Image (cartoon, rainbow, N blue to C red; front, side):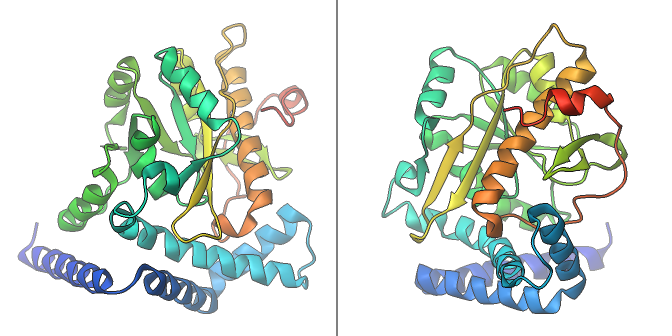
Length: 316
């Protein structure tokens, strides 16, 4: 490591600490207002990403390119992207005023699903997406009865990584680096811990092509593989931002259990399709809270058996 790189990392970390200190002097409402304006600037400035997002929206939701909804949803998607880290930063402050279960309100039958898994001492592969605030969801999961160890990608700067880890783990979540994760995840699942993963981005050659909004896309089957290998359910969990500041609703969908009567390849497809079905349902309800400007529908990935598409269409 060069002295120049060390210096750059030190300056970066110091700048972020100063920014965090300044944010601590501002009311939460002001911080979030500024976050939305940052999102607006990204929407106006990242034109290439904007074109990707518009194309994705038109094809996925069946909207006309001239429909005003397209611009509204895409702008909201950029705002959503900017708000996620700011809400994580504000989380500790908000916890002085509200409990974790007030910030993360369990939706529908979510509490029953969690209680049943915990009563059975059942671990699960907790799979979510870049939807709602996945950072707040992970950080507070242990406080709503879900002991969680999440897979994360580390940033290069160790000082920044320490700041991020401190915010993510303060309420009990544990983080494991995606490099070398399998052994650690195996231990966590055997001990009854939920293992958390974000699996909604393009998987390239390593994925399996599963329909999402009616179009096949390469999707990681890692979560389904873990569930099958360790005989635990795959648990789709999604949250969305409500109109109240720093309040989110969380939905635990019914667990997807491995089926040993199927071949491994078919079972991985079935569970992965089930997860994407849950994500599609949530995104349709709150389309501005997903990252439309990601190039999700690309070439790549293993083609499934043709009959699987029909057999598991709409599975959940």
